[in-house]
Image (cartoon, each protein chain N blue to C red):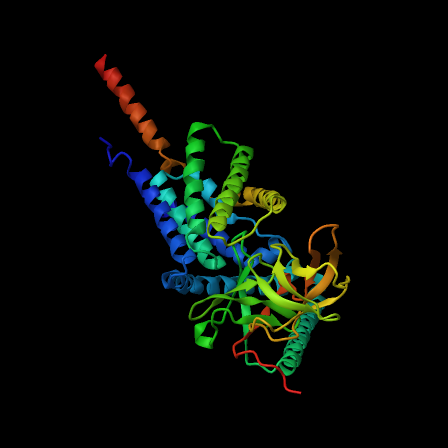
Length: 276
Length: 180
């Protein structure tokens, strides 16, 4: 007979694998328990993530302002102090100017798209190699819900994938699971923008006969009812028309710079067109 | 107890670090799978029960923080831990190069499992060339980061079961000596 005590460890591993499989089944079958698992997980982990983000920010600012000024020669102390003061002031001013520029762009964006938005800070990037997501510091308590569009003044960022009371996970437009209805601004040719998993996106289902050129701007069509019409998605970087097939291959460079996202906006009101 | 859990804590810190520092580590690229590195390193040090549980927990953390399917990474990381431990106990993998090779093998298994599950759930459409490209990039990035993670991980060799083996061997030898 099988000695259970001898195989206890293997049985526990088997149990864990079954448990994980059950979690996967819950989510693939779209049961509410799957979302509840995510919400509970985010609720537990978000304070740690906030703390880590704060720690990284503190270390970064310390490095920026002080570490490079250590080991100053004694005879140049006064001069160095002056330099450091000016540097600090300069850095502060530059930071303020950049912040002002960002805010100005945000305001201009809000004027162009009259929708209610919540500005959020990017807390973290996905630790998984297979998903391109970010975590933002706004959640259900700020009115953020699943599938709400996330944008910057540069263009489309993604949509809300998961929420918890204080944070939310955003599926970036460059993820392979992302799809946005879009049009070529110049010709109004319609297509679906899908992520490539890397830094680029692809416009699918554009017939071969349509005129699309490198440098064309791709904007949201507003057809799927998630993103407002006219938001910039990206710029065409490559067009390939093969000898066979119904569609052409269009590669685009996303408008939003995903490697330096700091603040994003979540559109919390239903999308409506600007009058006039 | 804290000493036993220290590789897990360091692993957890690495996961949080990649979520915050991804842009600085590999700007514009995919992120290396730090959890996989930690899990493979743990498989050289931890017993099956404790290590398997911790690999499962790290997988869950990765799933929650990435917003993907909860259980996906928990499943793959637990299986990779068990597989890696099984291999490590049968072959003498003590050098860093051997461990990096084991990590590369882990990435391959991870990608195969994730792809299989996603295809079963009809969540993704993949071409073979895309699969090979992703695999190559992922193996390169993960292996590149692995020496750094390995150096940062505390050594807890006495929980791997080798201590037990030693004790058994000593007792056995003593018995033979006494018997004489």
